[in-house]
Image (cartoon, rainbow, N blue to C red; front, side, top):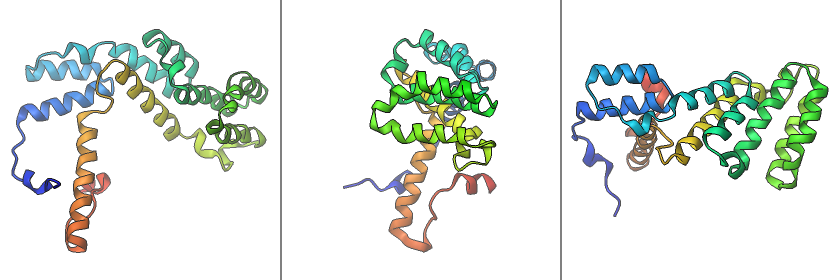
Amino acid sequence: MDLDPRVYDHVAISDSDIRNIVLSYLVHNCFKETAETFLTCTGMNQPVDYLLDMEKRKSILHFTMEGNALKAIELTDQLVPNLLEDNKDLCFDLLSLHFIDLVRSRKCMEALEFAQTKLTPFGKVPKFVGKLEDFITLLAYEEPEKSPMFHLLSPEYRENIADCLNRAILDRANLPSYSSMERLIQQAAVVRHVLHQEIGKDGHPPFSLKAFLDN
């Protein structure tokens, strides 16, 4: 029998729990200086394993977000050898970011050459074929930002890849790949969904982070 989530309605959350949730978020997102200040102000013990290699991870994510995917790949190989070799999806995504940056800079010939040497080999695997076609399609447009594949040039696409890379690095280090705050939000969404299904329209609506923040 499934446990009724309402049994937790009156469970108290301690200050220590809240501090650990905040620290987990800061560490996960590489806010090292803020995390160290937070540790000093709260008197918490410094979790050596969590802070390990945070600066290197921060640099990797910075280069991923700022349009230097090749440097991000180089630093990832140094920090976590074989990660990208083992994770072909992530390797393809990072290489695609460099291709996209070349397209955005209107370096079409260089982008085509890069695609032929670095991306085309992935075409031997069926799941990459559709993605390759989407990327190559960008070269057919004078303004790729206005093409049907415009989302590939969006900050959201780049951020999603950076998030996947961050989680993969943490997972390889046997650290949580999601922050405590993310897991809580996921759990809250599931609980609210269950209650909404049980009680119907008169019960709690499904959880929405945007609605929660707006309130």
